[in-house]
Image (cartoon, rainbow, N blue to C red):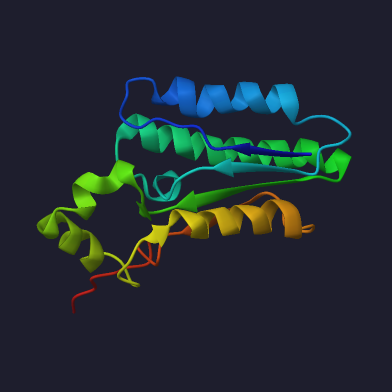
Length: 155
């Protein structure tokens, strides 16, 4: 009843194939059925900011556009389709920047709430969007602690 697209690679040379094409293949195979309730795509803040690696950002941006396409088609089943776009998340995959005091300070200087999300917080969002939510569809939720909103405006 719920499909969560969470697989992905970064800067692998296969980002478009795995992140975007793989997501499309799985969604087309499993989502469009009468028992479907919700489809969730785990995208990335890079989908809207364009930051990080070029193919990664493009694959995640394409995923958000595809999510909106699925929302149009899943509405006939009464199902929702949304995406989460996390910014930094405290995981082992990000150990390189988390453990480097210089890089970590640079990152925190670009974040309104100087922290990154815990993996459990993203899981809570996923639960809310797929199980509790019944009305929101075709939306991308940016969870980046205000990083995209940060502005170093100088007069």
